[in-house]
Length: 395
Image (cartoon, rainbow, N blue to C red; front, side, top):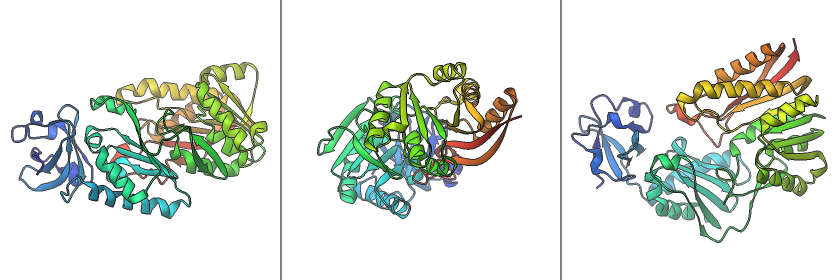
């Protein structure tokens, strides 16, 4: 039986409302000392009256002292993970015809600390907490039972692991993964580097937004900033754009853009340049280059709440620079994956940038993370991706 972890009086309200996190100052450390626990150790959670809140795992050295996994108090064993995987799979199979999607999205799928992306017969899993890290073998067994994958890549190199006192580790269970794996999106086939690429090797969260952009692209010249492997730019050309210029600071990413363009027969309409996006925009503005659609999909500029002011300024500068290379009646696709940067702030930044340039904007569509990244209504932290399509006009 896992050891008990008692909460202080009244501190169970957030859990009962649906959240899954327990902060260290909410624990009754006299009844259940955190120092007696090991990082990631399974625990049973109780309110101050001794009423069970469920089972989970704890960490004595982090701000989030425990995470609730099962409200019924079920053991964190293979059968629990098999059940959660089947529930998660049922959602994805209702929405996607092919097995290419985020299969498990942490708290939203009832598995805090676990991410799993599916690339056909290859699964890429990430453990971002000590509790999930300790359960890797159990999770591997459950994944194998439900999906019978050819390979499971444990790509444990997320920066979040450092907070939990975990080291990086990338390993493959099952058949070796030799080189990039295939990703199908729209009518295209891309390759993803699941061993050494960013995150899990692909960004499924923007797929539905790329779908929504398609009707706006006929004959357009497109600029794809922070392009990574070129999903936005290549999808744009496949959906009717005349051409796409992909820009990423990583030479490796631009090599992937070029390889994906060649693989899909789009090499004559897609270019790639390895350069910092701000530097590219400065040079393009000086050369009076213009695009009909500019896509701005940067990495998170605000990773912590205290970084908001500096990060918000960076977003504003970026959106303004992007507008300056737009054609007279162009579209700006402005995105942010910073949880601490609300949708309202993004809209305000675009509007402020437009007024500074003596332009006017029309907000055409809001964008959000795809349905394989469901938002948990009680956990604001699960909603991180936001964006919008703006029409930018002269004042």
